[in-house]
Image 1 (cartoon, helix red, strand yellow):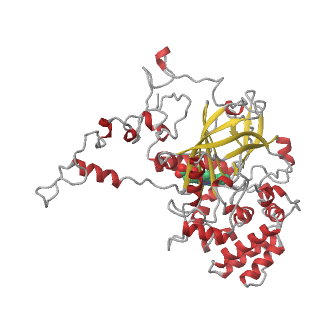
Image 2 (cartoon, protein in one colour; image 1 turned 90 degrees about the horizontal axis):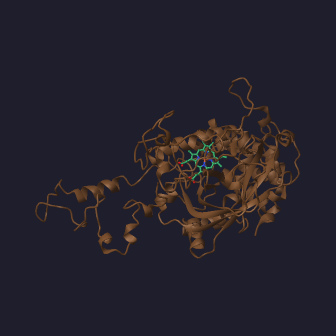
Image 3 (cartoon, helix red, strand yellow; image 1 turned 180 degrees about the vertical axis):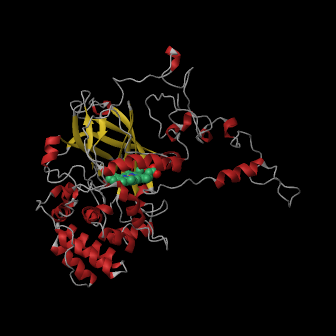
Length: 536
Ligand code: HEM
């Protein structure tokens, strides 16, 4: 019986002030006591002292003191909107997931776009990856695709994530800069991490200074599985394609916009939706089986690699429309909790080691950020489908088990509460595992440069120039020249022209190529990777 919106929770959502009922317009304390004077504290005489008895003063200050919650450890700055997803092509042949089964079915969604590195109050046009997180409120529980606007990631194994984020966020001694790339620590880490260089090519491209949230693509990044009721698995990569086209700004435009309006992206999204110009994205899938995966020239479990659309085309299966702004930024955008492990029956995980770390990390951090294991009771996180189990109590519990029993097995019959349902319930794909337990990186993850080079050669000349300019600009902020040289040495493994341009721009000699393996494959250009080739 959980209310699905704050409006249905008497007094809980601050919505009552919109009522036209005069009695409800009276200001009250959080306990509902009507307030006669909220502007003067209770004093002994006109000049005090102030009395401890003043519960109105104490409650007001107490609540204010606790307004802030921890911001997200990454993706702290974001902006969200409500919408709907409509399926246009059924995947019923490859998944039992209800949300992907019936053409024409509409599913409510909530989307949060974000930057990664900056703090909650940072500017929108930083050169940074954009988060693109979607929560589908399906008939079978919540499904989250927690993606980015770039299809690959900096690292291959979740155990490196704290290092990456420490290197990316402000330097620990001086507390700046907030920009993702412009400092010694980031480039130190990157220049010691060959696996990062495919993503760095994307990061230095125009993709990281988008014109609008409405003009970015979204990617689920990892390989997931779709699974049928019979237990047949198909690998899948998820793509969001903006109907507005792909658009970015130039770096000097980004710098000006940041100064003139640090809220540029959130204002743009708000205004578009408010004026009825609803942004839309098509959801696409790349589907492939184990046999195809085995033939790919890289490992489909490696999140630093993508599957070119020329090799496995993206099949469009539906459209998402964002059609409603939030009316309570904190309750919706700040308190929404996405997690890669939120999947309905019929969607499952591959063995990508980055994905497995994420599945743990989001739930763990949200307990701290939202303060209670009951954050799923918040309307924005509550499933729209029925929730029934024997979990109970805890901070701010809005629901508890109903009936005689709160344990299983029990013999209370109809009073005994919910029962497992093998036919409807989530069944993990029965992947075969027979391997030694060891701390290791697979040899199949070892080629770090082939796709980095493929990305570069897929760009139009002006886009290649922007990548070179961005690298010169960012590396010129690095004080230690040995770090600059180590960074450029990776570029020699990607493309000699780019390495020469950047070395020249930095006024340094061209260093030797990085010691790590050179590209092993000469992959053809993939025009889909160019913004200009795919713009509006
Ligand atoms: C937050 C994407 C890798 C930990 C986020 C958000 C996005 C995202 C979009 C913001 C969610 C929101 O709007 O609330 C990605 C992508 C990754 C990746 C696409 C790689 C493919 C990782 C890894 C870890 C991690 C490897 C940890 C092992 C976190 C944490 C948050 C977060 C702790 C904050 C969550 C919260 O406080 O609600 N990520 N991430 N991410 N990510 Fe990731």
